[in-house]
Length: 63
Image (cartoon, rainbow, N blue to C red; front, side, top):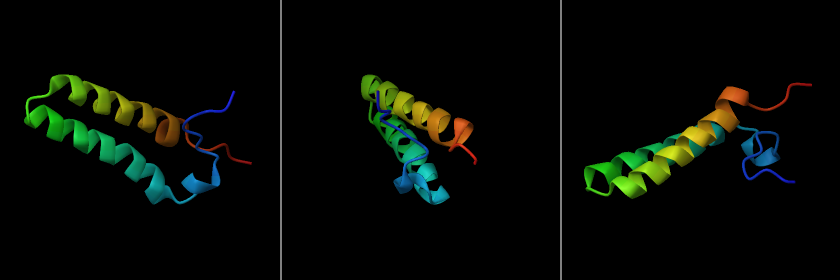
């Protein structure tokens, strides 16, 4: 089964793309929370945390 977020995909080779994929949904979750939509904030916050886990914490395989 293919992963939705694969840190080994060539698209995520530049580090800034991995960080952008993490920061943008977290930022948007903050905007949604500020605007009074906690459901959307939870959804985007969860997506940002999942992206952080897959792309930054686990990261691409070395070697």
